[in-house]
Length: 184
Image (tube, rainbow, N blue to C red; front, side):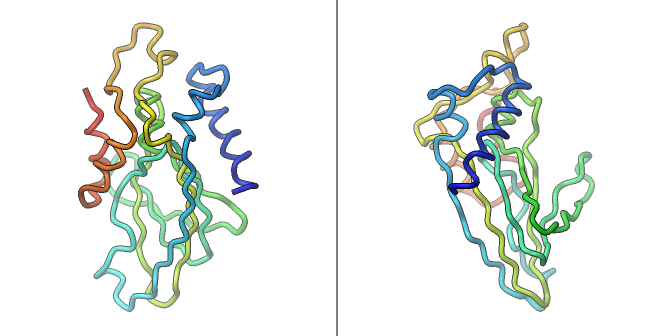
């Protein structure tokens, strides 16, 4: 986490700058990166990968997710038109950065969260290490005022992050359906 945090801050600064946010002050920090969660995920070998899901199709309920994957592969992202899946091949030393629902909502759809899934491998274990960059549980988020200052209509309501998070985990993975929770 020590080496990851400066990268996370820089990524968020660049992404938010494009939304006219001049600096990430303490209140904004609580909303975009109030909680950092590291997971170590092990996907065991499965002789019939088509019979199981490593992780069903979903979008992360984070601001961003920074992922280090091993050399096995298995991460797929939804094609832009939603017709199929694109394999994200592992690249040694590279990180995968996913936009999450929080940033989609805050940007009023300028950024789109990434629908993805994981397929297990028939002959090798897979390990991935995501860092979920989430708001603080009590943070309230919605479209940024900087995004709406030219009269654009908000597409989302403001929600408490813990309510959004709990809604996501109250049901099975359903693609990008969680974001409907915040839609106006």
